[in-house]
Every structure is written in C-alpha cells, then in structure tokens.
Length: 318
Image 1 (cartoon, one colour):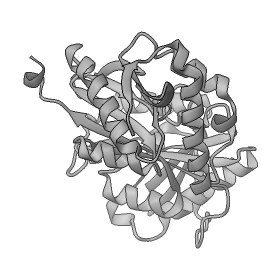
Image 2 (cartoon, one colour):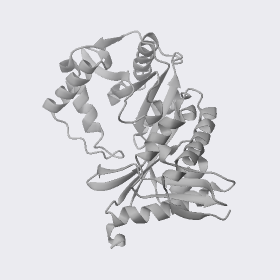
Image 3 (cartoon, rainbow, N blue to C red):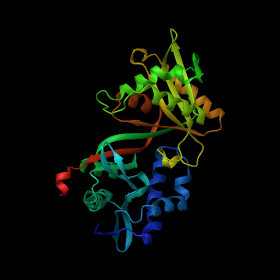
Image 4 (spheres, helix red, strand yellow):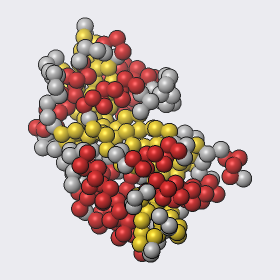
C-alpha cells in the first residue's frame, strides 16, 4: 500500500478515533470481559487524542484517507531518563499490511523524540494487535508490562477460607518490605528501596482511601497478601476508566509459602469482595519479567494491553 506521512493535526482526530475503536472492538472479541465504553464513546477518545496535539505525532494517508497514526501522549522521567510515552489509544494502523505503517510512523516520530532528548520510548498496544506487536519487536522494543482483566467468576479450585481482611498497616509492614526488596532481584531489576517509614505511610494511606487488604497467616505470621480497590482514574488501566472495574493493586506471597494455593485463595477473596461491591470485572497490571507473578496472573486473567520499552543510545542523536 502506498502512503504518505504528514504531521498529525486536529483534522485527523475523528478518523483516528475510528481507527482505534475498530482495533478495540477487535480486542473485545478476544477479551469479552473488557467494557464497551472505549468502542462506543468516541468523544472520550477524541479528548485524549487532542491532548496529544502539539507534541510529536504523525499521520499516514493513502488516497487522502487516514490509514495510520502515532502520537506522543507525554514526556516524563523514567529510570533516570526522559521518556516518550505512547499509550494504547494513541496509535493504530489499518489495511492489509499494517506492520509497515507502524514501522514508518515510529521512524518519523522517534526522530523528533531523540531531537527533544527522549531516549527511552514506552509503547502501549492492544495485546492481540499482532502487527503492532511484531513491529515493536523488530524495532528493538522489549516487553515491560501486561494489563489483564477477568470477569468475576469464582477462581477454579480456590477457597477463601483462612483468608481475612487486614485493617492494621503494622501487621503487613514486614511482608511489604520483603515484597519491595524482591523487585530488586534478578530478573526483575526494579530499584525499589525498602523503607519502613514510607512503606507504613503508603499502606496507611491506601487503607484510608478504601483499598482492601486480604491476608493469609501461618504460625502467627502473615505470609501472603493481596490488595484490591477501585480501578485507577489517573494511572494504569486507561481503557477501564469510568467503568465498574476493580483493580488488584498489590500482591505478594513469601517464596517458601508458594505452591499451596495461597495466592488463589487471596484472589478468590478479592473476587468475592468485588462482586459484592457492585463491580463487573477485576484488572491487574504486572511486570512481564516477574516470572512467578506473570505465571500466576496469566492463568487467571486475560491480557488486553501490553507495554514495551526501547532504549536509544543518546550518542546516536548527536
């Protein structure tokens, strides 16, 4: 397919909404637990795309028709670098061969990122968009995060017996510090520095905000916990905003206590709470490098968004 690349403008917004919504409706065919909103509320998506105007962006036109676009949502600091962020709603490509479109759009917009000092590139895409996934891999992106969702059916084989709700942040503190230290280990390598005062404050604030913490004890010590609450309205899980969606916000089971269905029991308690609280689905975001966590979530949730990351050598931009 012959196409030309131009700067994305307000005139492209409505057609871009249509391209994304077509992709989203296709994703819902794979993941029926996803809410309908993003596929029908065009103005919501249009408002988000308009926030990207004025930042690096490109449109692909074939015969004067929009067949692809890629927009910069924001710049922010990440891993000590200036990062460019493209969420799942800020790009799409159509036609019989969408992969070349994705590659060409990235090449154009990434040039502007590097010129503006952004050497870390974060890309979100709908999980079952094979062309976007293939193009990102060929362009040097590596997997970072998956977002997953499930309806509120019971967890097969799980029993929430032995699980209780924790209302005292002090009771969870030692396990949470162990959880934070875990992320520094191979192969995750996320630099979370355990600190008792800040961890206690975070737990206290989360409980005060309405998040629920379910725990399992063995021999008088908490060996596993899972926290759940309303899905974020300003963070991860964009496609679930404004819907009846609950979110798993944290979970950890001590390595020596795994393989005994403790995680499944904690998750079953969260599912029961979500159902009784009037929610329709449960959402989780997890690092793909976290092997035990990724294996646990992938057995019980369906992926709908993937995030990938690419580092560009700053010397190449000089």
